[in-house]
Length: 403
Image (cartoon, rainbow, N blue to C red; front, side):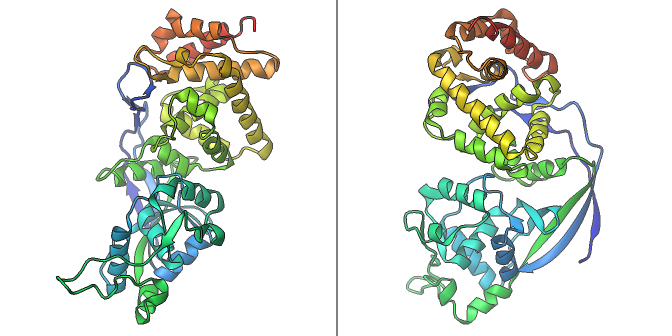
């Protein structure tokens, strides 16, 4: 395997804020400049031409990990069929970028749709559009699709190629074929190659920030991934499994006022910020992206017991907020206030640690929501160190009253 050294100039990172109709992050600009700049990255970049059989085996054996929570599989069967046809007849397809996180362990940076199309075609099943979120959760938890799930007709349909006519009345000869019925073209497909560029970061050491930059820059021509979509893929762990599970909890959906999960995982980021502020808010320094990335990386090392403690705390909090009218968490515009939520969660979780019998009072949350010092720290520069710590301090002071 040949290896070439690649030096990539790093630009200034931007913390893209949460911009959504139901959520309020404070009256500041939605773009936060990070206070540091990487002069350059030192990466190794290894191009490899893997054939389709090898790619499928890598995915099925979990060596190549498709970040299931990166985003849903979005291709329809016609677009997926065109990719398979291109491979069969020998047309080039775009290269795939993989990040080497360890021995025989690679994260997909770019190319998820292509790789999943190959995986589904070889397995001869295509995911139904309305079930892809459910399938995504299964794939993330298990790294593959078990046979019993694959053959569930409520989740999948048969993957028979759906290709347009070559000319009026002249069907495409591959139309309606599947992996098993390709005949002599099956071997032809199996041996076709796709260029895979495997990247490994040498410096800066101690972080994986180059993946973040590559995700963003490779997606500038299409729909950009949100920081949380990137984070969920890059730092996926059992801790993230529980976040995704709790994100479906009816109590949480009711508190947010959003019956269905956010397609770009902004609701996951709200939960994440609450937990991160509870456990490490005292260490906070800008940017918020950097802080949440660092916390997510720490959370990968959580023991089962530690993850269960966090899950119990969120469960406890959702029960505790049942006594607090949802309207208290809303701004005047009717949006869910993220600064208020994270301050209340951090203070309540800390108070609950020391006093398990403590109950949250609506009056205390109301007092926090209208406190002048809190409002000033939540109105501008909301992710600055001083304002974040001010909100946490005021929240702790007001919620530490008699309960």
